Length: 210
Picture 1 (spheres, rainbow, N blue to C red):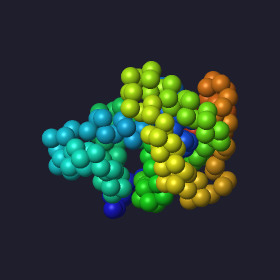
Picture 2 (picture 1 turned 60 degrees about the vertical axis):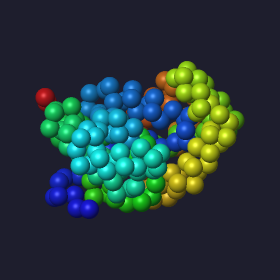
Picture 3 (picture 1 turned 90 degrees about the vertical axis):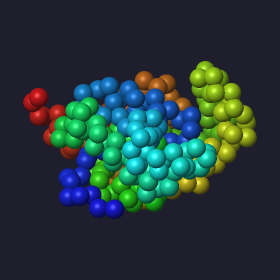
């Protein structure tokens, strides 16, 4: 897939096991001017199922199947273009904050054509018991009883270890920051923002008067 000659978009990635808090951090950072939060779930939820791309998505989602990597990236770019056209996302002054995408190394390879990844934040929580506790608490809070099942929780953690965590070997070590996810959320946020504000892309964008 070609990037259609578009300029690469500056981005930071938040990666972590389920329960590490990447969605929480991404949403908070996305409320700060000059940042735009885009989670994979947001892309799917915003999808117009009447379109050709939407129909292709439904073919998989209606069967409970994983959406192929190529289609996931197509959907992601189409939604980003939609957000750009409606001025929700302004690629010239916004840094993308991604969580849940890329989901694996193949997606990371495909997104290279679109993204200038400035920093990868790895939210670490080696204690699987703590991760499981967080996931169970969130599932019950959101009334998703099935997701509180122990086997479902362990399967999601293992899927992360097998498919998503290898992304950390795809990007240069120099742009990866390890953040202790067991800290209070405000401290995790502080650690992320301290690093982000030192990035050349942020300094350049923050200097633009709008």
